[in-house]
Amino acid sequence: MTATIEVAFDDGFFPSTLELSAADNQRVTKAFLRLRDDPSHPSLRLKPLQGDKSGKLHSVRAADDIRILLHRSGNVFVLLKAGTRQSIYNTIERGGRWVTNPSTNFIGFIEPPEPETTTVQNRGQLASPPISEQPIFNHWSDSDLAQEGLQQKQIDALRSCLREEMLFDLGLSEDQFDLAVELISQTPEQRRSPKLIADDSQQEAELRDAITNFGSLHGISPLFSAEEIERIANAPIEDWMIFLHPDQRSIADRRYEGPARVRGSAGTGKTVVALHRAAALAHRFNTESPDEIQPSILFTTYIKSLPPVFENLYNRLPTAIPGAIEFVNIDKLARRVCARAGVDLPIDPRAIDAAYASAFKQVIAAGSPLEVANITRQYLRDEITAVIKGRGIQNVDLYLGVERTGRRLRFGEALRRQTWQLMHAWDAEMQRRGTCDFVDVVLKARDIARTTNQPSYRAAIIDESQDLSLVGLQFVRSLVNGQSVDRQDGLLIVGDGAQRIYAGGFTLRQAGINVAGRATVLRTNYRNTSEIITTAMAIAGNETVDDLGDEFRRGEADATATRSSGFEPTLVVATDFAKQCEYLIATITQLERDLLQRLQERMT
Image 1 (cartoon, helix red, strand yellow):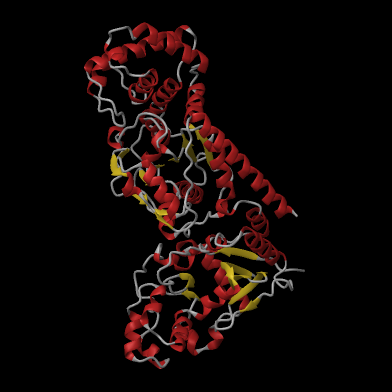
Image 2 (tube, rainbow, N blue to C red; image 1 turned 180 degrees about the vertical axis):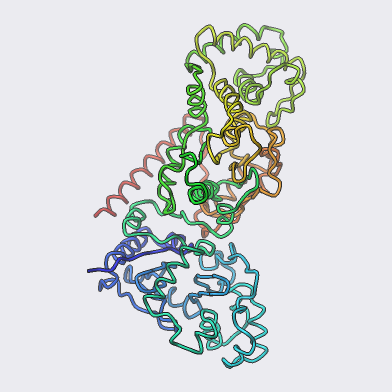
């Protein structure tokens, strides 16, 4: 009977496959599927690599010239990278080694960076593992190291290392380097008594435990079962970069004494961090308070099409707890809260639009301040929904003094007073038609939530928070806190003001939320090439962005790309909007055909 195989992935594995051709990428996928089913299959040619004295580093044949580098302990495999046969061998010749350190709880593959490159091989320069609080040889005394034949100069050099990768900077000979790697993985007692060194089955168990307990701190994914590996193979590779880099893991696992915030430009992994945060909190709450309300965590956003996508991604996480997270958009959540409180607020989008058109005609007369200012109907509608109702402003005097964050046009007193009249006329027309607006429901739901003694959720995560209204944020906050103060680990706000789609804006100060000491900016871009980032920034310009009160220039939000250089983006000049649409439709259609062809090839 074939033993059960478990597979984990180093954070460099999937990026390395993106360096290959589409055909070789598929061959790599087929190879690790075959490895899952039968590691001894002759086509794989699984064998230890020469030059690695541990005997744990192996190569797997994916194609004539394509290999997978992996670490193996019994039936536990860690896939490290894929590449040409020569590149894998060069990695070992240059000193690439698997290291386990019982002193610092480090596990992982270390290798020297290639000079003047930004490929996956030198990703350690982009996101180094966290520096330990103690030297990596802290479990060895000077006398013990001297007994191994090391000179005091070499011992002092080893003592200076605060990170395993720093071994490459010491100028050690090949034999000295291999000795250092061998010593770091053992204790002096194990070194002196080989009987203390674990046998194969115990080494397998120790690796499994290490991956589970602290592998994610060093870029190692959780272990995947055979079924999960099948799902990986059948999904786009980008969808399965679901394990976190060390700087992201600390955000997901950290305990926050109050509301916290994560922001970063597109492609920096904000949503991935948020989903892992949800999973981490679910495990924590289930352990600490197993009898608490279920689902205990709310994952919400403004756009109604996103929650199903987020839920699907969450369910792919190996650490996901089914039923622990509720994924729902703000409007749907607000309608539910109102309905449970016996408040019926019908919504008819066509009636809402008709009511606004009628109100606009009534209020915006020729020669009136808003007509003279030539302000568009949509801008005024956004002013009402995003500023007045979106901030819960109850009287005109408050509106006259409010700071209209995110609104570019200056609004003097006359303009504001007439806008207030327009809002009342719109409300009256909606009432006459038997409807109200979406923002009215959220406002009412917030007020209901504020009167509830017991919170509805243990925690909430808001993604794409830049499109949420202030009232929407207050609503979610009340669902988590009830009438109490902000709870520990209660609220995580995730977003990027530069990606705002809808009108409006506000500051956390205006919302009464303080995230001092609990705010993080992600600056590593895992999705885009440097060419795409550069082009996007050139188009977007370097204007100032107000992101919930944090102001920055778009250029300052630029992130370091981890993916290798790619093609330069193509400039397409269209004479009008219709031509733009024609080009986009044709391009998307062709991409869809190409994707279907790739799926058919994979199935065959």
